Length: 455
Ligand code: SF4
Image (cartoon, rainbow, N blue to C red; front, top):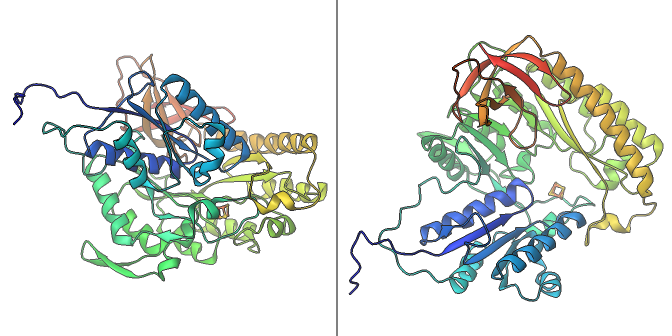
């Protein structure tokens, strides 16, 4: 029997986490941390205080693989007890070949194996005083927003991508499980949900869209019903990684307006669509889903239904075989599409991706030059769009407060971490709270950000 009094603190084991890669990997990190917390582990923000360090790796691009290997090397040098997981962990020999001293290597979503490896590296004594895990789990994002992962894997075979090899085919979560998780997050104070997967518009296709009950209503495991259910919670809800299939049209009427005087609530008029290119031949070579859709026509139809719709996207320039004409098609398309937020990558080879074997790889200097031309056009479009907002009013959520007490906030048009901000200067005696909704007037704009004051 223990002679420890209930007041005596029991030393716990601490785990460090380095989370690399996309929001989907971040959600995996959160799940691992939630499980570890439930078992009595604490977390260390630095290497020195950790009994073991988990490195959640990314293997999407060769540059990401190199970054992951560097992170593993740093964790080994600084701490020495390192467990590797995530996309790069799908190829253990690659990691142990470079870093033979890692304690364990597990692949993506192998939560149980990661926990096992932590238990072995830093066994924790049973602790009767341990806090219970909050029912919504532990979040690596600030409390007022959370990523909501609706499925794993992907059924497509894009030529530049190895995610289906790493993460397997599409595996959707049942709709009531997702809606319940969203409900718990709302109860815990989350005000914004960021819906993620590899292909959000394909949600439920693998299960053939079964119907489940949630809050006395029936919902299909389908993106349209999911969006309806999430919208009913009244939180800001954004859809990421949508492909422009025909059924996406049905989502637009579900979206709220943002130009009204009242704070927007529900499904935001925001779509994150990774177009990657515009030219039909390049899209065909890329083997992109929905490659034959007339995207300009679709964008115009969506904007006619909801003029507040904001579209963000990413593109790849210098894909193998991309001719100057094909690239010019992309620039012309960009001018016509007038997207709100745009990211651009120069094509990179990825080990295992079929595009490596395509003919006519574009020289690095040409890729650089196309990237610069693309970004110049995207920046010009963004600057003109944001300048048009000066003098208007909007609602924004406070993400951070800087040392001067000013707010780093975001309007409904911008997703956290990937889009722009609105910087709101505090008036004399004015204070802000993280997660607070504020009504602002836009007073100035730069290429990517806005500036404002509360009204
Ligand atoms: S849709 Fe294409 S790029 Fe996206 S995860 Fe699937 S295969 Fe990869």
